[in-house]
Every structure is written in C-alpha cells, then in structure tokens.
Image 1 (spheres, rainbow, N blue to C red):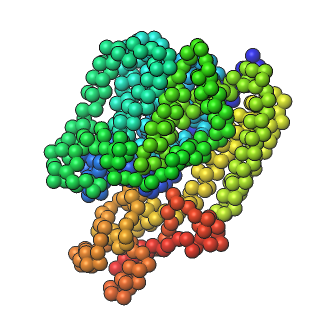
Image 2 (image 1 turned 90 degrees about the vertical axis):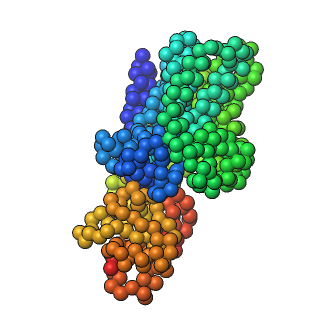
Image 3 (image 1 turned 180 degrees about the vertical axis):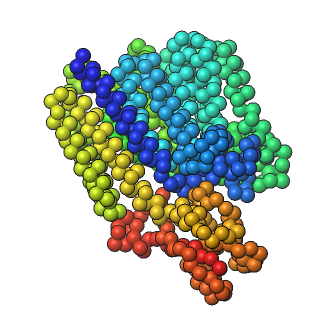
Length: 555
C-alpha cells in the first residue's frame, strides 16, 4: 500500500511539473518559419473574417488544412491576439491525446501501465517541442490518439458511441494535417484485425455510419477548397497552375510525396526519420529500443493473439512515412504515444519479473550516462548565454534533487531511474524556457522589430521591407501595415507616397544613406536563423561572425 502511494504521488507530481514547464513555453516568442506562419495565417483569418478560404499575406495558401487556423482564430475572438492564445487550442488537443494514451493503454493493460504510458508520452522531447513550437503535428497527435482510443473502445465494447467518437477524431485529424489523420488509425486498426485474423471486422456495416460522420464534418473544409481553387483554374499555388484544392488535399499533399507528384523533395536519407526519432523520444529512447525488440519478438512467437494495434500502428506507419520524398523530424511526433505505450508495457514487465532485475540494472547505468550528458549540455547552455543566478539556482537544485532521490532507500531501482529522469527533464525544460530560448529568440528579427515599432511614439503609415524577405513573426507581432518592396524602384515609389519606417539589410542601408537625404537609424538588430544554429553562433567568441545586422530606419 505504501509503495502504491509513492507511485501515485510520483505521477501526480510528474504531470503537475510538466504542466508548469509547458506553461512557461507557451509564452515564448513564436519561432519562424512554420509556427509563426501558422499564427500569422490565423491572425489574418481572424481580422479578415475569411474562414473558408485561407490566405497567407496576399497569396493563396494550400499547404495545410484549416482546423488549426479556425481554432486559433476562434480563440483570438475570446482572448485577443497573443502568441499563447495561438498555441492554446493545439496544446489542449495535445493534452487530450495524452489522456487518450492513458485510456487506450488501460483497455489492454493495467492502470499502472496506462499511467506510465501517458507520463512517458508527456515527458519526451517531442512533446516539449510541440507545446511551444506549435505546428500541425501538435493537434494531429491529439486527434489521432483520440481516434485510436475510440476505435479500440469500440472493438472492445461494440458501442456505437465509440465508433462515432473515432469518426470525429479522424475528421478532426484530417482537417489538421490531411489524409495522414486517417492513415494512422486505419493502419492501427488493420494491424489488429490482421494479426488476430478477425477478417469479419473489416466488413462491419457500422463503418458506413463512421464514413458518413467523417464526410459531413469535412464538408466546410471541402467547400472552401473547392470554392477557392477548383472554381478558379486561373489560379496558381506552389508552382501548380490551376490546382484542384480537393485533389491536393486528398492526394497530392500526402500520397504525392511518395509517388513524386508533390514537387517538395528534400532528398532525405532512408534512415532520416529513424535518427530523428532517437532524439525526439529522449529521454526514454534507451528503454524503447529493447522494448520494441521484445514486443516484435513476442508478437512473432506468441500463440495467443494479444493486442497488436499499437505496435502495428507504430512500425507500419513509420515505414510509410519513411517512403516520403520530403521529410522533417516532426513527421513522427504523432507516433510517439504508440512508442510510449510499448515502452511502458516493457518497463512494467521488468518490474513484475525476477529476470527483469538484470535488465533494469543495465538500463539504469545507460540512463545515468544519458543524464550526465544532459547535465553537461545544460551547463554549457548556461555559460554560452550568460545565465542569471536564478538559472544557475534551478540547475543546481535539479541536479541535487536527482542525486538525492538516486540514493533514497524508499524507492526501487526502476523508481530511482524514473524520478531522476523526471527531475532532470523538468530542469532541462525550465532552463530552456526561462533562459535558452528567451536569449536565443533575441536573435530572431520579427518579434524584436515589432516590439520596437509598437513602442514608437512617432506614428507613420507602416513599414517598408527593403531586404530579400522577412519573418512571419513580424506579421504577427506588428500592429500596422507591412509592404514588401521587391525592387529598389518600388521602394522609392512607396517612400514618395507616404511616410513609412524602413527595415533594411546592410547593403540597402548604405544605399539609402547615399541616395536618400534625411535617413536616420531608429534601431539595429543582430539576427540569425534560430532553427539552424551553427557552432560559430553557439560559441560566444565567434557569435558576431554568424549574425547579420538589420536596420530600422525612418526619414
């Protein structure tokens, strides 16, 4: 009973600690490109009232379905336009996904396994990223897990309400990131039926109800795509002349990446998603590696056909995603809850088995090696960005607490690992959110320029962009007109028409000083790409060489 109280207290404190860390992250400045672009689209939708047709700046936007933009714009109506408000609906759906991970696991395994699966899902690095660098994958993960939970519940109970719930989850996932929102639940369900040889379950007439629910929920989005694109063959989007919005959504954007019809191709290596997963599922990756091996081995050898929905949903979908000609690390984030369930099941098996003690001892040593690496990285981050005494205090307390609980006699060997891992993960998240990212994002031009402009007492007619491009975060944070000047001639035309501020790079700044009288400098910004950091930037001695100046000018 005493041990039970310790376990329950661990999960309670763990989830509260993670919620605090992620709450800090929701107040960070938006990160360019994707997250800031989605926030800008949501703000533009809110201001224009155009909900069925999606635009980014002055261009037609066809890349992502509209649910993320709809939900963010709706929250803007309630709470106002803020970066944390943009993140709010996606993070809430992600929380639904973590709860769904618990409920899905509970159908097949013990309550403790279910709690551990939800905890692992909530405390991997991918989840940390998804709560502040919000992309479509944040909301996709939540809706996919909700849909899979509802499918599993329907299979276990035959209650129609769960089938309808799965249809709602699939429709929401599809309106978040396209057909992949259908592919993952279908692969998971099909894996279960094939493994158990339950062929009749492929042909239930009740699926017609689910298809109808999905079709009805997709109508607003489909009507918007049809009205914006299919009725206007003269339009161009992403280099495509007269694209069909419906075909792009249902085929080109997802399956076209495999067939080559989608022109996006970053030529990924065959194992790109695999080595991306190794860091994104940290700090639990060293538990997952033996867990997936044992799970697959068991499924092959077992004569009793147990649950296969989770491992099939993970492996087959992972292979499917790896076939894409265009890949980014976050493409597997929706599969992390499946990995969490596999890992939790393995850990609980070790605890319940006498043979598991040796494995626990080995994993404990490996995990502590990872902890030492994490501590070294955090210490380095504190140094290279001149941390405050508060940050050093958080770091010291975190490390001290992890060491203290390691020697606690009240905890078992596995509990030692879990508690110390949680403490260091929370410490890492706090340092990243209160120190590293705030310092790093001072080198992102959009929020910094907007902050200076919004405080200017000298009111002008807007901002002229006199450089190659500009960040989407500037669109989101700046409250006035922005005009992109693609040529020098157009820039000077605009300067003659009205009185603007100007954002210029070094070349254009010198050019304006030579050609235009009365140019004065309002502010200077040092900028770099915060999503593609190089060692030259991370090294304080060489940082100046890796940043470029931008100038805010007036005349």
